[in-house]
Image 1 (spheres, rainbow, N blue to C red):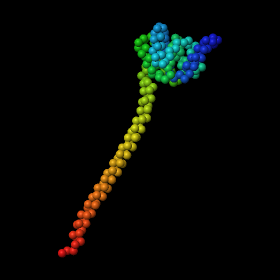
Image 2: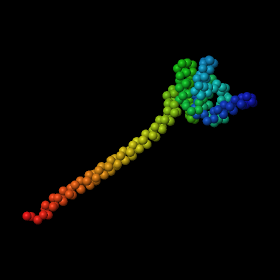
Image 3: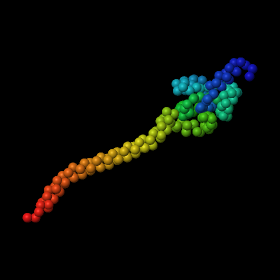
Length: 196
């Protein structure tokens, strides 16, 4: 690349592509510039980027960034939707736009180093958001611990209940033994008297 501006563009793209977690590639044939601007605005509101750049420059940037796995999706007029965290959210945007404007044709998705075909994008759109998934995982870890704590509490209550019952039994036996002893002594007294 002899042109310094192109080198700067490639370096900037490579910097943004480093650590790329997810990306969706679109075929942009037939999309008007106003429609692309609307899609770009919708994506920006969700903290995502919409790139339409020359394929040869993107391929060089992908190689520099170590994301060559995305290169098969960059063929012909292509737009890339870039996001850091949530592939489901990107896919939902693409599916919404595809329903509104049949012109938007997804090519595929790149998620955590793996390529997915275009027909997998609706399935990715059905994924819950990252906070929801994290809360579900936390719930999975929390449920057994709560059950375990409940078991310990139940056994502790049972043991305390048995100890209390045993204590009451001893108290009743102690108070009952004192009452029985004088009665037994009074019964023994007549028996100890010499017969008359």
